[in-house]
Length: 322
Image (cartoon, rainbow, N blue to C red; front, side):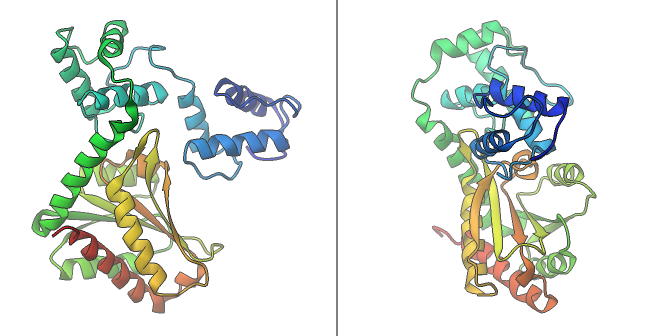
């Protein structure tokens, strides 16, 4: 859905926006007008999504997830995994108490289950991995009211684990994937990384879902995905940022890649590194970045320069504090 759309689905969109604090007052019900678009962009910005005012599948999922509050439903491990702001709140509370569920992503997966059962055991309540009234009551009884340090605990753990793996290059595995139009670049980067005795894993799925599954199943230590946009000038690097969490390794590596690509001066526009909650950043279990390259970077003659620059950024990042 986008500006100008009409119908019952637009009215449902407006109702969902209102339920999460973005009430549409001036557009007619069922009419995707100026205010609906404006409020949708504000919602997208609040969720670290692409703020384009278009309600695509990812934005719709976030709207649905934003309606859940902790205690609204029983939380437990299942397939497909439960997602929502209630799960993110649970992860935040657990992290604040020292029970890490990994990155705070709003997805009730195996790490969240482990954190829940550890907490239940610690509190001498039924260790069933299900978050119902008793577990929530226990969480509220002992929760930390100052949550400003919550992300520091998990961010520090992720950063330390990632840095240690990267420094021991013999066991480090880099996943390299293609989100569209970058086969030559992927092969060049793969060859350069192997020349440095770094393990690489080609991620070749036909969809984001299959790429995410491959990356997780391969247990990559970090992933780099490339995407070409012929309408874009310059480039953008993305790392995971969502809820109260921002991936420090993703941000750090993204900063180095951004700096090195800018130094090539292939575009008059400087590239940036942004924190976002795109599915491939949110759902991969390792620090992941997306490198979106514009028209100036498409030319084959530039592919070697780009691959070499990214390789140098990875090596430079691995030498931090060494």
